[in-house]
Image (cartoon, rainbow, N blue to C red; front, side, top):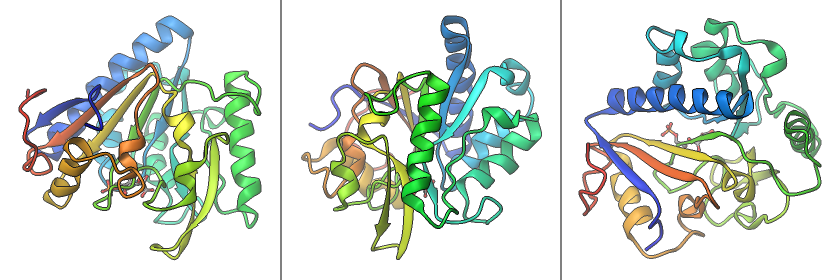
Amino acid sequence: MSSVRAKVVRLADAEAVSAAAARDFVALSRDAVAARGSFTVALSGGSTPRRLYQLLAEAPYRSEVAWERVEFFWGDERAVPPDHPDSNYRMAAVALLEKIGAAADRIHRIQAERADRDAAARHYQLEIARVFGVNPDGPPPALDLVLLGMGPDGHTASLFPHTAALREGRGWVMTHFVERLGAERITLTVPVLNRAREIRFLVAGSDKAATLRAVLEGPRDPERLPSQLIRPEAGRLVWLVDRAAAAELGTVEGRV
Ligand code: 6PG
């Protein structure tokens, strides 16, 4: 089994997944601020989390988060400028950051528009280290929350099947050309993702059903299914999945 420590929470639809994630975001932010004075979160891209970001910007969630204590990071970024429709930063900025008036010095985006993307990856690693006050060449710090999505091919963040990024064991951030996309991506690596205190996968839609089953219940094959690499060292992993995505799962564990 690939994910014995993962909890799977089945929800009715994508809206319920977003609401469950919003409740978790609020609760985890409170705990983190109480314990450490800040809440460090890596946002995910793609389309699924947009509704979560919209919800967080609205009542009742908006007033329940100490936004001035939240440090925003991203799990991955596409090689486009920050005002491009494909930018993961832009999606979160429009849906959430601009609405809550997030302070610029708490927004730590990946500068994937830079021509030298290795320099952009290094810059992002230095920025993470600066915010956490740790050595940029040492072990990665623990984010309070990492939000992730899963593609129908089993990728997560920009960790795509059969790419060298899956095997990066030291760097926290990596840039690579993804053949199947014909494009470059910058991504957090497995070691930093698995250091997180809390990880939430948000998965919705029937096009994810077969892959979700393979990732959670199939044989371990992370080269083909990179989402299987997500196994927090000491943190908690929860999959928030809608009924359509969960349709092929064989277990009822975690049902709500
Ligand atoms: C990205 C991602 C990626 C995403 C999945 C799921 O930049 O594309 O961060 O890993 O989370 O592809 O995307 P959807 O939510 O759109 O299905």
